[in-house]
Length: 82
Image (cartoon, rainbow, N blue to C red; front, side):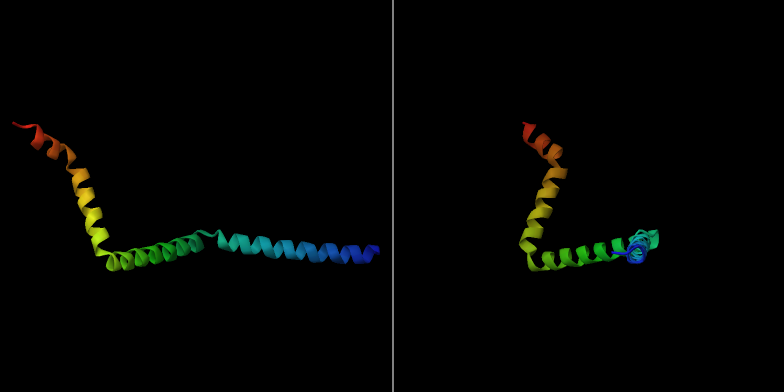
């Protein structure tokens, strides 16, 4: 390998590295991150809604458990009274 070939390879590698750095910087811009987070959250919400529609009994059970958990002190007081 000659010196000119080595310099050419080094220049090509430097250009690839600069392109990679530019792509990374573009992905880390606040607007790009916000858009990506919005897209992911909307996708997750739609998936959750679809799951709830397909499994209404599980949703009802989860709501019942949450209601019991949030009212646990009142429920305990009801059973302690005599």
